[in-house]
Length: 430
Image 1 (cartoon, rainbow, N blue to C red):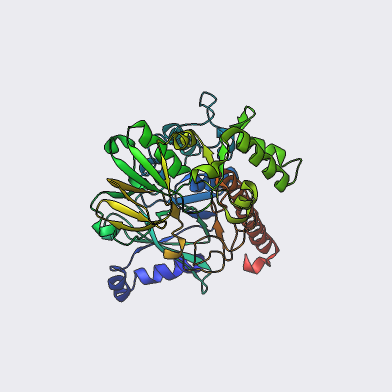
Image 2 (cartoon, rainbow, N blue to C red; image 1 turned 90 degrees about the vertical axis):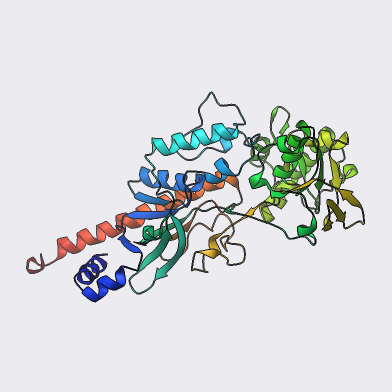
């Protein structure tokens, strides 16, 4: 870093360089003991807090104007945490005791804001990372950002880069034949707030994950007529079993029994409590829910009342979409149904390949770490990943703690090396 500062000082006194610099991003030299974190969602906040606990400072870059923008701006109103709050806590700070077992969207946002305030985390808002690339010549990451104005462009030169943009950075928008001819609204769940605007309408929800199922239930509550596309097999489990959360019970059982045996127990209890879901078009995968989650990251649906609406006929189950026509949808089984609107509960994906110029830690195909959990948190040259475990906030917390510990250890070793070099230097060099 000293070399970089010296070089910059020389450039500032060169008239030719000054003209060239006028059209370039403002260069910011980040001290070697400060990390850059990209993303101010739960993952970025967790990483910043864990670093602070180990006396390592950080700069959090956030492209929007708030923390947890996906939760604040892209989540529907009735959303609650699907897992009990004790499994969704960030490191070093618990949820308030007064919060219910399954906090609401607003309560979770309040918790995140309190978390940021408690640890003094103040992100640099409206700074979108355009690219990040490791400069082998000088051993630092060059992180280029843009702001609201052209003159707000910056280039950070840093030793440590933590990618915290998460698994849900951008919407997955499928293309269907005839989409332009449909004539009605076709929106992603990121634009859906409640069923109010769909009251009395026939709505097709494409996607049968937790969001798709819950949006269907919400539509029913506003007297809409929802149908749901179930293209693949899906595990639907009760949210609670034997008076405990299904997730919590599963984690406890896994301490004593192998995963396949726990899966068999979950499926038996689900059959007793929910019945045979295949009768309603919800066929289960061959792998059990935990084994499937462990191998593919596909999360089982935790039922919060949707299945009862399917059984009663308030929600219709449809096959995969073949094509769209004017206010109608043709399915792969040949059936044609009329709809006023379509909601795409097709999920999100990582945006890392669009800006990170690196291919060792992250796959360019899906934007996830190449190594499976729990080994995908660290790359080369001071690069780290937090929140890409496909294991929710529990995985995020584990990543954040490991990253903070690793950076702290390396920083301490570097300080010790510098101190020893200074101490052992001959008097003529001091």
